[in-house]
Amino acid sequence: MKIGFFDSGVGGLTVLDQALKLLPHEDYIFYADTDHVPYGEKPKDLVKQYVTEAVDFIAGQGVKAIVIACNTATSIVIDDLRASYDFPILGIEPAVKPAVLALDKEKKKVLVLATRLTLQEEKYKKLVKSLDSDNRVVSLPLPGLVELAEALDFKDEDVLPYLREQLQSIDIREVGTVVLGCTHFPFFRTALRQIFGHDVGLIDGSIGTAKQLKRLLGDRLEDGSGTIAFYESGRPVLEEARLSKYRLLLNRLETAESPV
Ligand code: DGL
Image (tube, rainbow, N blue to C red; front, side, top):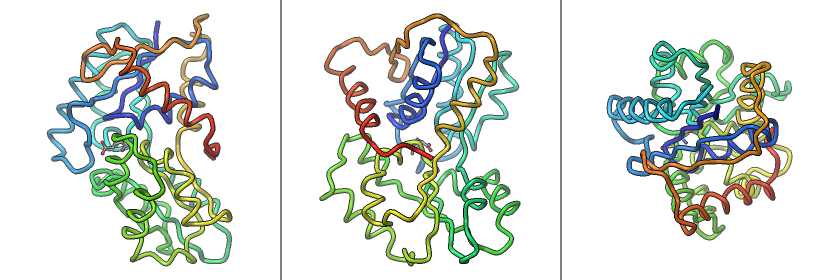
């Protein structure tokens, strides 16, 4: 049986990429909700409805696990989803814990970049409260990066001015670790490095999620060949021109700095 991956858009590929590395003999479904991306600025109930419909569709294809490769969807609806299906459903949340643990004693800050919806959610607020006793976590929504990734626009001339403008209120020298709390953001590692420099940790949850998937599958492994069936809002993606977008992005991740 296949493993389902879900995201609002192309961000989930950053998690799928790690799963392909760790579990290359599985076969995958990748579902992007292209009709409704971006989620991060939409009302919570609407996003909940979109995710529920999409996961129902993926479950209908016959899968042995689903990875919600979207921080926003995880924060809103993961508990309901887990209660509705009898196969494992994994989520991803901003990697605040490893980021706080990785901080040295210099009193540097952790900057969490995510969608507005993720940062507004109770789940995130509780997570930060439980870890951040001395107020070192700063959170910032970056909806523009989701739009740039969806437009396949990774050009420095578009990305860097946006980042510089959004980060105006942050003293870059105070930041010790940046958490990429949206699965679209690892596509921008190179640009973020240019802004934050090489000594700053850029942490995301993709490797942790892939490892967790492997653990949960236990011995229920396949002898497949890493095929991926792509779907966009319930429609199979069959045309070469549309498939090439996903291949291009997976290739892009091959040449990018590896996630921590
Ligand atoms: N990639 C998603 C996340 O990890 C959501 C981006 C969006 O649709 O706004 O949060």
